[in-house]
Amino acid sequence: MDGILVVNKPLGKTSFDMVAQTRREFHTKKVGHIGTLDPMASGVLPILIGSCTKLSDYLMDHDKDYVAIIKLGKTTNTGDQEGEIIEEQEVDEKLLEETKVEEVLNSFLGESEQIPPMYSAIKINGKKLYELARAGQTVDRKPRKIYISNIELLNIGKQEKEIKFKVTCSKGTYIRTLCEDIAKKLGTIGYMIELTRTRVGEFNIEDEGKVISLEELLSKNSSRELDDNEYRKLSNGIMVDFGNKDNTVESNLSCFVKLYHNKEFVGVAKIEKNNKIQRFILKENEKGEE
Image (cartoon, rainbow, N blue to C red; front, side, top):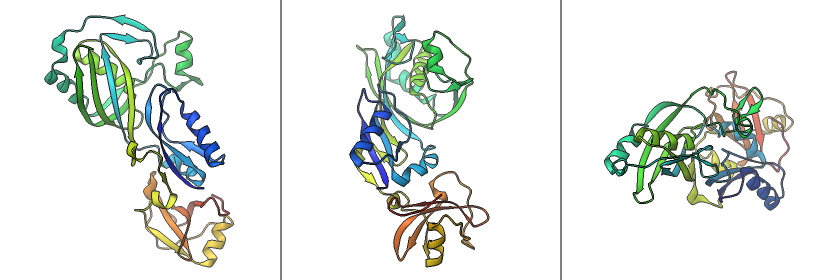
């Protein structure tokens, strides 16, 4: 089977847990996922099945939607509710005025730089940051460029000292860090107590349980009918010159062409500048090489 299963990952489960569960349910070892979600976060986790696993590199750059809740007046060593509280302070009620909160949230729109948290999977000198953090070490991290295209205030819990907001952001944005930065800009401290991812690219939380086929995934892409000779060559891993096709070197899914043989969908191909196939992915029930 080929396709992308839209999973709504529950709290407490790891992304690997969901991959393992999908392997059991679909009886296949070829399973992967797009965009890791921490155990304490819930929401959309697209699971790649069969030949779709070969497209993972082209699906990683999607923007994402999150809904998060910040707890003000406290901070933890991890930036979220899994860590230990390391600082507390009183929160002035004026900081929770709607106009003030919206002004601060809107200040994060556009491109900015963000320093990754110590409790992250980024590697420095072969060691993951969270491994160093657990050993009591702190190292300098280089800031990374992120982009926030939308940020929206959803609710202010004045009694609870909590702010709920929705954000659309680029790949590589750490929402835990964003929550801490929002609190700091408000003039206090804070940490993330809840996180739900509602969208990854075109995969929405409303599509939970839906399996999107390889052909459907590339429904807007151009297509090509293979003759018997071309199909035979590709099925045996022999590259084919497609002649006067439009050239592209894009790194997303738009660089692929859907392939048909006898009007039946058989796979996809990425065309390089020389008009030859650089990558060929056959359906799972076909024979082929990339």
